[in-house]
Image (cartoon, rainbow, N blue to C red; front, side):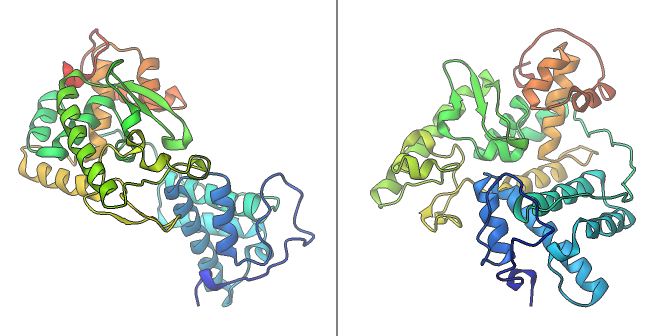
Length: 347
C-alpha cells in the first residue's frame, strides 16, 4: 500500500478544520485526488504540483516509519511538521530543499485540508549561500561553439537572454516579438511574467528555426493533430486555440505524446534532459575546469551585464528576481566595471 491508496472519504468537517477561503475538494475523494483537485484549481505549475505532492508523500512515509501505521495528516495536525523538517535539517539538505518541503506541507494543510498551520520551532538549515559558477566570455563562446543545430540556438538564447531552462522550453511562438526585439516570459518561477531582450545575433537563426517548426505544425494538422496544451482554463474558453500557430511551442518535442491532464494526443515542448545531456557532453569536450551547466549560462548573463555597467535593478528585472538581494550575489563574482546595456551575446 502507498499514500496514493490512502484515506478515502476522510471527513472535512472535523473540529480541527477552519473556515478558510478557497476550494473545498470532494470530501469523498482520496487524499491524492483532493490534493490535485486543489492544485489544478489554484493553477499551480505541473512541476510545483508534482513537487508538493512528493513532499506530502515523504511526510506521510516519515510518520509511517515512526509509528508503524499510516496516519492521515489531519490526525497528525501541523505539529507533525516540526519533527519532519528537523529531520531534513539533520540529513544535511540545502536551505532551498527545506523551504520547498515547508511550502509543500503548508499547501497541504491550509489549501487542501483547510487546517490551521503552525510549523513550530523546527531546526532550520543554516548554510551560507554559494557563489554561482560564472564563465568568462571566451569560455561561453567555446562552450556554445561545441553545440550544434537547435541545441546551439538554445544555448545562445540561455546566455543571451538570461532565461531559466524551463522558461526557454516553455516559450510559445507568440512570446517572440521580432519587431520590438523582445521575448516575453510568462508564468516564470513564482508565477511572474517579465520581458527580456532578443539578441540580434540570433534573430535570423531563430526565424529559420520557426519556419521549420511551422512546417512541422502544418504536418501535424494534416494528420489530425496539431494541438498543444494551454495554460489554465484557456482550453475550455477557446476550444480551438490549442491548434493556432501562435500558441505552438518554440522548441517542440520530436514526437507526439498523450497529455497527462487532458488525455489528448499533443506535441509537448522538448524535454529539458536533452539540452542538459548535450551541455554536459560539451563541457567534457571543452577546456573548461568548471562544473558548468545550462544554468551557468544564466549566471554568466547576469554577471557580464553587471560588468558591462548595466544597473543592477535592470538586471533584476531581466532575471525576474523578486528581491534585489538575490541579484547582488553576482557582484561578488564580477571582474571589472564598464558601460552599456546590451545582451552579452551581442558584445
